[in-house]
Length: 175
Image (cartoon, rainbow, N blue to C red; front, side):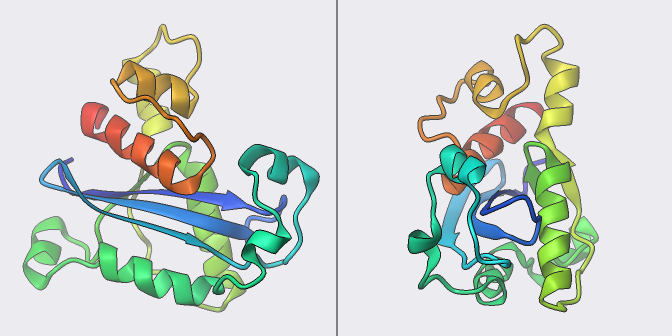
Protein backbone atom coordinates (compact mmCIF):
# COMPACT_ATOMS: atom_id res chain seq x y z
CA UNK A 1 0.00 0.00 0.00
CA UNK A 2 1.56 3.26 -1.14
CA UNK A 3 -1.35 5.71 -0.74
CA UNK A 4 -3.18 5.98 2.58
CA UNK A 5 -3.99 8.19 5.55
CA UNK A 6 -2.77 7.15 8.99
CA UNK A 7 -5.19 8.32 11.66
CA UNK A 8 -5.28 8.44 15.45
CA UNK A 9 -7.94 9.63 17.88
CA UNK A 10 -7.68 10.42 21.56
CA UNK A 11 -10.82 10.33 23.71
CA UNK A 12 -11.87 12.35 26.74
CA UNK A 13 -13.64 9.50 28.51
CA UNK A 14 -14.79 5.93 27.95
CA UNK A 15 -17.42 6.94 25.39
CA UNK A 16 -16.23 6.35 21.83
CA UNK A 17 -18.00 9.58 20.80
CA UNK A 18 -15.73 11.62 23.07
CA UNK A 19 -12.93 12.17 20.56
CA UNK A 20 -10.94 15.16 21.81
CA UNK A 21 -8.12 15.19 19.27
CA UNK A 22 -7.25 13.74 15.89
CA UNK A 23 -4.01 13.34 14.00
CA UNK A 24 -3.84 12.46 10.32
CA UNK A 25 -0.79 11.75 8.15
CA UNK A 26 -1.28 11.62 4.38
CA UNK A 27 1.02 9.22 2.53
CA UNK A 28 1.13 9.33 -1.27
CA UNK A 29 3.48 7.16 -3.32
CA UNK A 30 4.92 5.94 0.01
CA UNK A 31 6.00 9.47 1.02
CA UNK A 32 4.51 11.61 3.76
CA UNK A 33 2.85 14.48 1.91
CA UNK A 34 0.73 16.23 4.53
CA UNK A 35 -0.24 16.20 8.20
CA UNK A 36 -3.22 17.47 10.14
CA UNK A 37 -3.90 17.86 13.85
CA UNK A 38 -6.82 19.34 15.70
CA UNK A 39 -8.28 19.43 19.14
CA UNK A 40 -12.00 18.59 19.19
CA UNK A 41 -14.69 19.49 21.69
CA UNK A 42 -15.72 16.02 22.90
CA UNK A 43 -19.25 14.66 23.14
CA UNK A 44 -20.04 14.12 25.96
CA UNK A 45 -17.88 17.00 27.10
CA UNK A 46 -16.18 15.70 30.22
CA UNK A 47 -12.79 14.15 30.89
CA UNK A 48 -12.11 11.22 33.14
CA UNK A 49 -8.91 11.01 35.14
CA UNK A 50 -7.61 7.93 33.32
CA UNK A 51 -7.81 9.45 29.82
CA UNK A 52 -6.25 12.71 30.98
CA UNK A 53 -3.38 10.74 32.52
CA UNK A 54 -2.77 9.00 29.19
CA UNK A 55 -2.80 11.95 26.79
CA UNK A 56 -2.57 14.98 29.06
CA UNK A 57 -5.63 16.75 27.66
CA UNK A 58 -8.36 18.21 29.87
CA UNK A 59 -11.56 20.20 29.45
CA UNK A 60 -9.73 23.55 29.44
CA UNK A 61 -7.71 22.39 26.40
CA UNK A 62 -10.79 21.76 24.27
CA UNK A 63 -13.24 24.30 25.69
CA UNK A 64 -12.91 26.51 22.59
CA UNK A 65 -12.12 23.69 20.13
CA UNK A 66 -14.39 23.03 17.15
CA UNK A 67 -16.92 20.22 17.25
CA UNK A 68 -16.27 17.04 15.29
CA UNK A 69 -18.26 17.86 12.10
CA UNK A 70 -16.19 21.03 11.53
CA UNK A 71 -12.92 19.18 12.08
CA UNK A 72 -13.95 16.27 9.86
CA UNK A 73 -14.66 18.65 6.94
CA UNK A 74 -10.96 19.51 7.02
CA UNK A 75 -9.90 15.86 7.29
CA UNK A 76 -12.21 14.87 4.46
CA UNK A 77 -10.53 17.42 2.15
CA UNK A 78 -7.21 15.68 2.81
CA UNK A 79 -8.41 12.10 2.32
CA UNK A 80 -10.71 12.67 -0.68
CA UNK A 81 -9.20 11.37 -3.90
CA UNK A 82 -9.30 12.82 -7.38
CA UNK A 83 -11.78 11.14 -9.72
CA UNK A 84 -8.93 9.35 -11.49
CA UNK A 85 -7.42 8.02 -8.25
CA UNK A 86 -10.87 7.10 -6.93
CA UNK A 87 -11.47 4.94 -10.01
CA UNK A 88 -8.04 3.35 -9.67
CA UNK A 89 -8.42 2.63 -5.94
CA UNK A 90 -12.14 1.82 -6.01
CA UNK A 91 -13.11 4.40 -3.38
CA UNK A 92 -13.47 8.17 -3.22
CA UNK A 93 -11.23 8.23 -0.14
CA UNK A 94 -7.73 7.17 0.76
CA UNK A 95 -7.65 3.98 2.84
CA UNK A 96 -7.34 4.74 6.56
CA UNK A 97 -4.69 3.04 8.67
CA UNK A 98 -4.61 2.89 12.46
CA UNK A 99 -2.65 1.02 15.10
CA UNK A 100 -5.52 -0.91 16.69
CA UNK A 101 -8.09 -0.04 14.05
CA UNK A 102 -10.89 -1.44 16.23
CA UNK A 103 -10.55 1.57 18.54
CA UNK A 104 -10.14 4.30 15.92
CA UNK A 105 -12.71 2.91 13.50
CA UNK A 106 -15.26 2.48 16.30
CA UNK A 107 -14.61 6.05 17.46
CA UNK A 108 -15.12 7.34 13.94
CA UNK A 109 -18.36 5.41 13.44
CA UNK A 110 -19.66 6.44 16.87
CA UNK A 111 -18.99 10.13 16.41
CA UNK A 112 -20.50 10.07 12.89
CA UNK A 113 -23.63 8.51 14.41
CA UNK A 114 -23.65 10.97 17.33
CA UNK A 115 -23.74 13.92 14.93
CA UNK A 116 -26.13 12.14 12.54
CA UNK A 117 -23.60 12.21 9.71
CA UNK A 118 -23.67 9.64 6.91
CA UNK A 119 -20.73 7.28 7.32
CA UNK A 120 -19.14 6.53 3.93
CA UNK A 121 -17.71 3.08 4.85
CA UNK A 122 -14.07 4.06 4.89
CA UNK A 123 -11.62 1.23 4.26
CA UNK A 124 -9.56 0.66 7.40
CA UNK A 125 -6.31 -1.28 7.80
CA UNK A 126 -4.61 -2.19 11.06
CA UNK A 127 -0.89 -1.96 11.77
CA UNK A 128 -1.38 -3.69 15.14
CA UNK A 129 -2.74 -6.86 13.50
CA UNK A 130 -0.06 -6.69 10.79
CA UNK A 131 2.68 -6.25 13.42
CA UNK A 132 1.57 -9.44 15.16
CA UNK A 133 2.19 -11.35 11.92
CA UNK A 134 5.45 -9.61 10.99
CA UNK A 135 7.03 -9.25 14.45
CA UNK A 136 5.98 -12.49 16.15
CA UNK A 137 8.84 -12.32 18.66
CA UNK A 138 8.40 -8.68 19.64
CA UNK A 139 8.21 -8.12 23.41
CA UNK A 140 4.80 -6.50 22.83
CA UNK A 141 2.94 -4.89 19.95
CA UNK A 142 2.39 -1.43 21.36
CA UNK A 143 2.74 1.47 18.96
CA UNK A 144 6.01 2.71 20.44
CA UNK A 145 7.58 -0.77 20.39
CA UNK A 146 6.61 -1.56 16.80
CA UNK A 147 7.54 1.88 15.49
CA UNK A 148 11.00 1.43 17.03
CA UNK A 149 11.33 -1.95 15.28
CA UNK A 150 10.47 -0.14 12.03
CA UNK A 151 13.15 2.51 12.60
CA UNK A 152 10.99 5.30 14.00
CA UNK A 153 11.30 6.66 17.54
CA UNK A 154 7.96 7.80 18.91
CA UNK A 155 8.74 10.75 21.17
CA UNK A 156 5.31 12.04 22.19
CA UNK A 157 3.21 8.90 22.61
CA UNK A 158 -0.55 9.55 22.95
CA UNK A 159 -0.41 12.85 21.09
CA UNK A 160 -2.73 12.10 18.17
CA UNK A 161 -0.41 13.48 15.47
CA UNK A 162 2.70 11.80 16.88
CA UNK A 163 0.84 8.49 17.06
CA UNK A 164 -0.47 8.92 13.50
CA UNK A 165 3.10 9.61 12.31
CA UNK A 166 4.35 6.44 14.00
CA UNK A 167 1.48 4.48 12.47
CA UNK A 168 2.30 5.87 9.02
CA UNK A 169 5.93 4.84 9.45
CA UNK A 170 4.91 1.31 10.45
CA UNK A 171 2.42 1.04 7.58
CA UNK A 172 5.06 2.13 5.06
CA UNK A 173 7.30 -0.64 6.35
CA UNK A 174 4.95 -3.61 6.81
CA UNK A 175 1.69 -3.10 4.90
